[in-house]
Length: 333
Image (cartoon, rainbow, N blue to C red; front, side):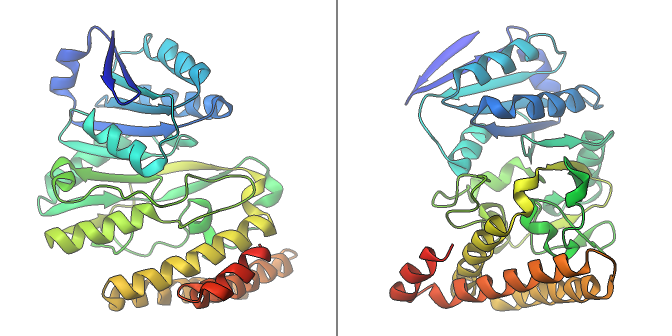
């Protein structure tokens, strides 16, 4: 079934969706924009078919007709409710996620990346969290690295968040957290009556590295908690695997990410209370110290990567409100 909603959007659904949508406790929103990700997206869909309860799947596809055709052909063979929204124009991850929310039907809305894989029980844990924590507005959990090339697994754990993963998470189940794992997060529908994902962030992970502000997910989380005074909790059982391709551990990628992260940190410091960001930075420092103590044959690589991150991160922070330095710094990336 196809529905044209205007604004270059076309919506595809299964003709048997209605009853399933009524009973779906959670919708999973996934955005994608290139058929190069189809093998990854297929792995994600395979992991969704193994979930109980089955979720509603909401895919937002940008520009790539072939990817749209592949995903619809796959979904037509599944037993869960699904919606595919196709746009002929580039949306960007924030706009695509907002569109996914608008076309979802469940009381809980989860977000995972198109190169992630859900661990068994993911939807069950997600629904259980909000049953046991009625005052929580959102939840996040571990994103474990799935190395496409095992030779890159030396990458510093203190920088796992740069590649969409989590390292040492010492919080216990139900701990209140100040940030989310963008590849693995769930919110109550009511969250989107208060805030939406804001445009103006980078459009994803390109091989040449970040070329704009990162952390649209954490920006969303900060604004959500600020506007609702409700909490986001960490739940260790809410796990995914996140595929890590070799380009994400390259020096060029890290330099660019670090630079834009520095700009983001300067921006956060001016927009929000700094105490929560300070606590988060302290945790990063502790994790970095652990990397220093982990001495093996890859210690030098990790040290080089950490020093590179610190240098270009500081450069980004200094460049935030100094246009001349910003222009010069970009030439070094």
